Amino acid sequence: MSRYRIGNEADFPSNQVKACQAGGHNLAVYALRDGYYATQAACPHLKAPLAKGKVLDDRLIQCPWHRARFDIRTGEVMDWANFPPGIQMLNVVRKEKALQTYPIKVEDGVLYVEIAD
Image (cartoon, rainbow, N blue to C red):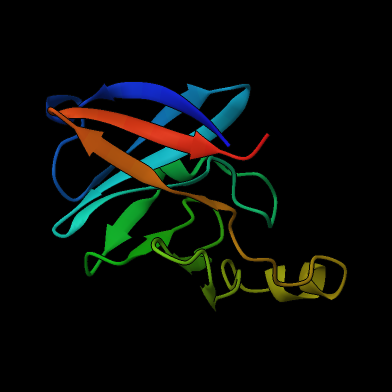
């Protein structure tokens, strides 16, 4: 497991998502009420940038393109791509896939993400 500095707490406004890079990985980093979380940066459906998505109910990220929703803490699919009407036909070949998640540690106001080697 490698550890990478991704910024200071002040760099991550509450209830928002921000794109970051660490160890060759593109990440989406979330500042929620109970802490900081990181997932892969791209939606597994069609690679939309999750940093342009919406954080919902302090627990979900909604893809900006097709409204897939994922649990930020676990990466679990809560609602697969369902917009615009007709996109479901593509879902025949694009099966549901959870987000990769990465643990974040905070030390003295600095955020570090841990990524498996």
